[in-house]
Image 1: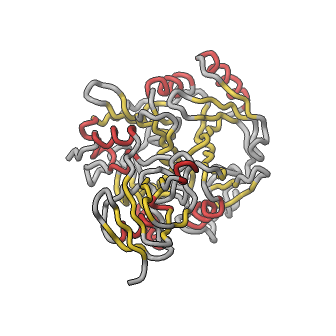
Image 2 (image 1 turned 120 degrees about the horizontal axis):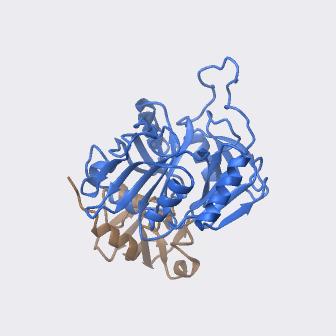
Image 3 (image 1 turned 90 degrees about the vertical axis):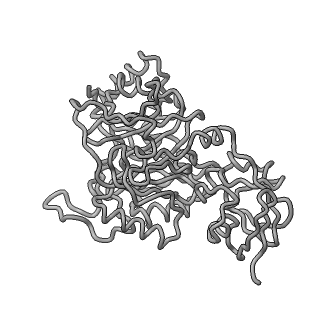
Length: 109
Length: 307
């Protein structure tokens, strides 16, 4: 089958990403939720992952969330990476401010 | 009490890729490019706006908002408000005329939430785009995409809302139109106006300083909002939520992101405000309904995804 296999080691999920498609978009199109979805534009840092194995191309990302030294270590935004091989990824915890907010965000119906 | 601040005048937004951003704001939102400067910044306006620009895009390696500017009625008012800000203990910075092309001098200051604002009195008057000021037609032909009517307001996330309130209300003459109060009575959201609109600017409490939630553009009708949603799908643009209605302001809305992850809103309708109106209060326990009137549940992304 065409495309590349992406395996999320944190959640155990795997999915196929087509050539030229971002990892986040491939995940969303399959209805999966193993990486948090934010702005999808490299701006908010919500979909930060660590790539453990594999090669990919990178689009433009906010330096605040993906500084060059982090990108070196494979810490990138899933919305802006395009696999060139199969990938093994893991989730990176959200910044504390975002997590604190999340825990208070319960349905209020 | 009005002190001569007239309306939102401009917002400068940082984008990661200028080409993609200009395409988004012109072809999708329907704004018109009016100029570029030697810093590479691009100036745009919506068609009903009478001044030369309301949106400035600056390419940078981190998206977000540089500043929002408010137009005041005249130079005397600018001098007075500048004195009032200084007397109140706000540090002001002078930005000379023409730093933004065809814009007069600006008085810039940063409020305790970490956001920069500007006041200015003069900007080149170019008139509404595509229609005459004499016997004008209803609308110009040749508008693209959502055909945004005007830049309307911004929502910022940051701390120290009470201190921000004091500057906007007591020094600059804004009124509090709507608020969200937590059970202890602390204001966690404030919608401020200098006009008949429900908000010219809004703030929501957030621990991190200086975060940008969205810039909003006005459309005329619910049908226009639906059509905007269609265009978002047609262009495979990143959607946030909508079309739906807010409880706060009761505006009909849709949220989406520009290609650098800055959130945009287009909306129509909403309540109106006169200075004798008392603030509308939403209780934090009803925050889901306050923000999304139909779902009545908070969308996590809406509260936490910021640039």
